[in-house]
Image 1 (cartoon, rainbow, N blue to C red):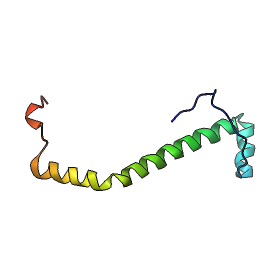
Image 2: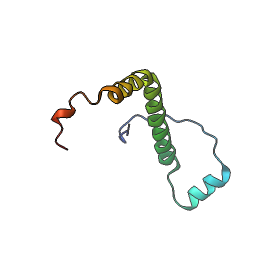
Image 3: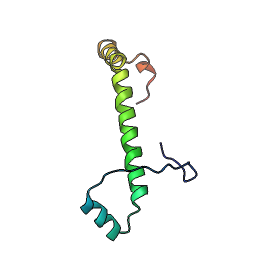
Image 4: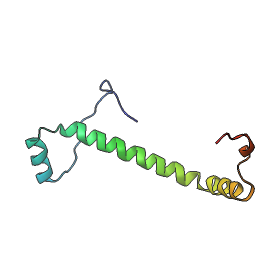
Length: 79
């Protein structure tokens, strides 16, 4: 879920390792952008994990069906 630079920003406080902050500054890392990217990645991962958990039963059912009966349209496959 990449956000554009035009997205409205809101100031927030976070606690980060002092050593990490100093190294980031030495390397000219934009801390706000890096934090935002990291948070976007974590949100995407958490959403994916949540979706998988919410749909686990259906996925397990379908996998069992395919294991027992094969793919429903397998005869039309060309590979």
